[in-house]
Length: 93
Image (cartoon, rainbow, N blue to C red; front, top):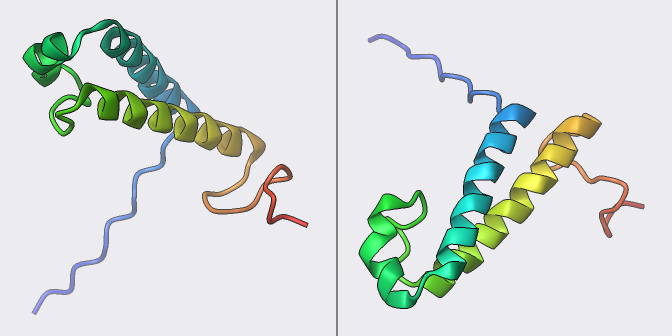
């Protein structure tokens, strides 16, 4: 029996996050300007559209993803690892 070592998760860089942020911001602006009918017709052409049938839910999801992305960039730039509490976290004393 061969034992397979787990593969390490790939590191994500600030540049990777910035690229994703640009895509998410562009799609958010596009989706906000669409009607519900337009969103339903074109959602398969969007990164987020495949999994989200409702335009309003897609907008909400993108806004959440943008917020998380910005937080992750700040964490990476300050040298904090994922999950560590930063100086602005309410739980950090």
